[in-house]
Image (cartoon, rainbow, N blue to C red; front, top):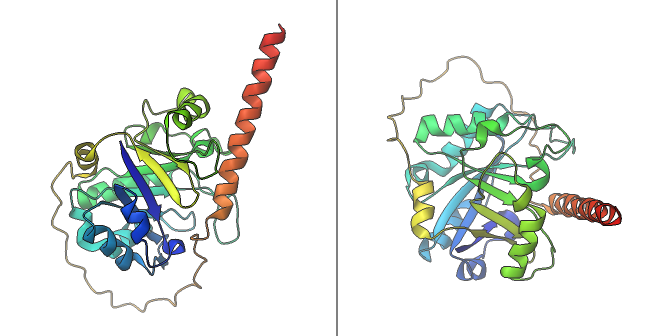
Length: 271
């Protein structure tokens, strides 16, 4: 297994301690087609200089077409898209109508994954909460993503404890034993204290196998300048780097599932 952390500008410019304590670091690159992590290059360099595995992710926004945000992501990460040790990851988090974030349809991940595959030859990984995996209140279905590597988020305790067998047992009871669509979990984000922490179920060789191109990267056609006037840009939307609200949502849903499971067990025991 590998210890993995994911970071954004919210973690600051100096992530050296996080890098030192983990085998791999996943760095936020973009959001929609309007936001780039202003510390992206700095954080990536620290990971590379330490010789640790690197992953890159885009945060999905419902107000932008899949092609636009996928291409924006690829433009920002540049040649890293063809690095066979660097997985490209889609971060799907429905913010349920928070201002500036339209409700996601659930179609975005496959559309973005298809675009990334056609441009790079890589199969993207999908980050998703346990709540959204089970519909998220919007009847999401993930049949079209079930053969892509799954990075599941769910926090049994949310108290900063280290990963161990007891924590995995809690994860099994809450999430893994009730897994839908996927037959296995590639990586589990089990806590967000003191930073986002995950465990990858494999070694470096497994990481590389899932990260590499499955088809050669095609030669991209040159960009032809558009002679028509370009519309003025829309106002910049807020960044999601302040991710406290999604952590609260994960905690709420996990607590709800625990109470439901307990109520069902108590009812059965009374029969």
